Length: 227
Image 1 (cartoon, rainbow, N blue to C red):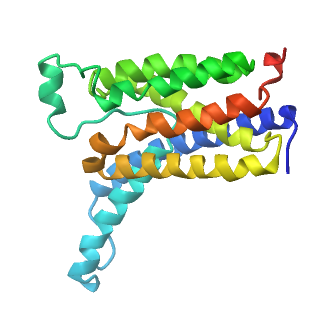
Image 2: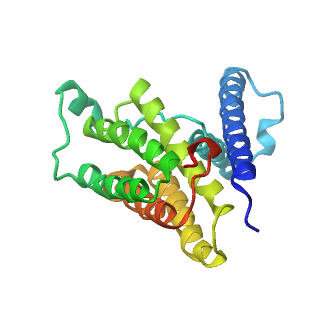
């Protein structure tokens, strides 16, 4: 089913609201979890086997990590020797894959300008410099990380909303795999930190290809950007 741009805009706002609500629930969950850990359990601990006791904190940590991923902001990366790199004022080189893979985003923005998909161009124009500075500084947590994460997720939600604005159904055979690959890469590289440095650069490439398809075949999603 292809939705009109007006209904797609409503859907986009609804999705952003749901993600924001999940972030609030995540904050409440983390506070409750902290208070619970500080209290002595009232249930009969001896009834749990050693294997069960090991699984409880593992499950809790995994659930917390998943909730963090859907929060409407970024938190930065702290794994590896990043603290030492921040202390030394280190910066990524231009030939680092985390840096030069932003070039396809610029190309997607130029395609959007040519086809007058200005809402997509606006999003890319905000996300690209934020992402460049964020990765240049080795993903340091802080205000920049939160801002970059927010706009990057807004761009992802924009792509999902455009699925309902597809001019032909056959395009969905291209765009849905882009959505799936983007989600898989984001999830895998944030849950398994060993995958972050070698694989997270694909978070620039795959969304760029997705954006290029949208810029070529779609119309603006937000009515005020109609020409």
